[in-house]
Image 1 (cartoon, rainbow, N blue to C red):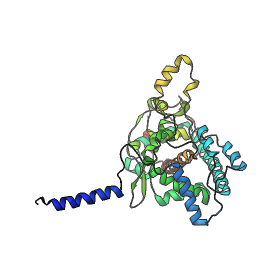
Image 2 (cartoon, rainbow, N blue to C red; image 1 turned 45 degrees about the horizontal axis):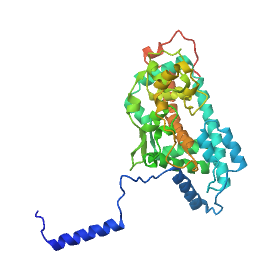
Image 3 (cartoon, rainbow, N blue to C red; image 1 turned 30 degrees about the vertical axis):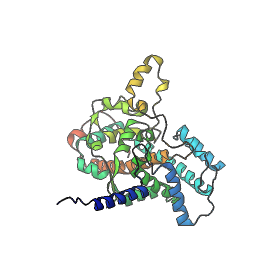
Image 4 (cartoon, rainbow, N blue to C red; image 1 turned 60 degrees about the vertical axis):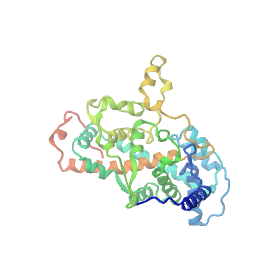
Length: 354
């Protein structure tokens, strides 16, 4: 192929390029366009609401007294997030009230899951850890933590008691999680512990055509000693009664967190540490040090949906881990567990309560 030396043709092409640059200016690296932000969530929900219901009562509405009372019942919402919930919104008041009703009901339901995990005896939980780490193959683990779009929507419908309002919000939140990198918000600010962050960071849409979601296999493959992993959990929730040399992964650590009274773990508070050990505590809490001071690039006048994102990720985890626990229970009842698991901790007296 020979390059044309015609000055007329070169001049014409350059004019076309100049015209295109005038009509479609390029975005430089000094300016970044943020999409799928929390303000996008508000607009997207409203658009879908109007499209479905033909709502014409929208305007700048303050949070009703009823919704404010519901906000105060959510102890797992950060102080900064609570302030944003008090701002004016373009959502209809009745719609916001129904959203908050559903938020309260979902939290109450999730507390039942926490109690269910708590009553698993020490002996049986130790057996489950060994079964999950040593017996379950990586392929099965990945399949358990892979969800189709339809399956996710079914989980949302079931857990929200078919609340159309909250299901609509969660559907939009799922899109936000898919494009979270474009929000400009640091993912660390969405999580309160390193364990929660690792799980949230691993969730992604792996197949756009078939709409399949999954987690990064590394989070299911990497193991560590429990003694080394305790610092990743909030409030030292792992009791010393567990063998500190037992191998665990992020799934087991996340399950440890769900066994506490808070289904959404609270951020470790290193300010309460004794002054003499404050320096060492600050060094140990690397995740807490990495937390950004501001939640996002957005103004705090925009309503925050961080707690909803945390809840949706938690729902997906519970959906998968419950299937794993059910399979473990089935194998135990049929006496299919390997001998080294069945005999481990035999001296401990316990009853399987799942």
